[in-house]
Image 1 (tube, rainbow, N blue to C red):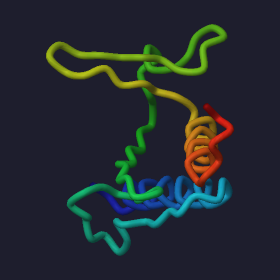
Image 2: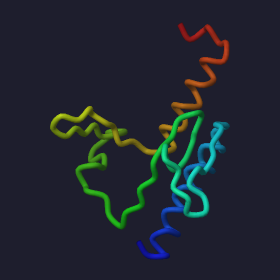
Image 3: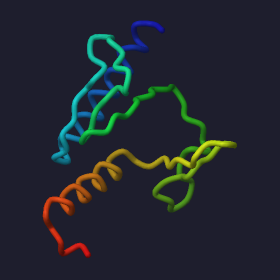
Image 4: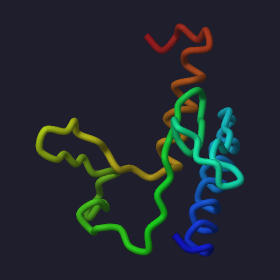
Length: 106
């Protein structure tokens, strides 16, 4: 992997961590200084996430109509969903706020 590719990956990690912090979530870059963290690249509210920077993303992974995300699944693998990072972070924030003693969500 070349230097620029590593820089682009680090930029994505910083972007994701800073966006999470904008949503009042606790976030840390675990993959700093080129040291690969075994559990994931970034940590957001006690969950690890990998960051993958690519020049192009396959079009089938992107919403094509009014969808907010795309569910994908390969043979013998659990389904995953591809959604906008900001929408996901907002959902995490709302979930966190709802679990902090607000019982009115029942």
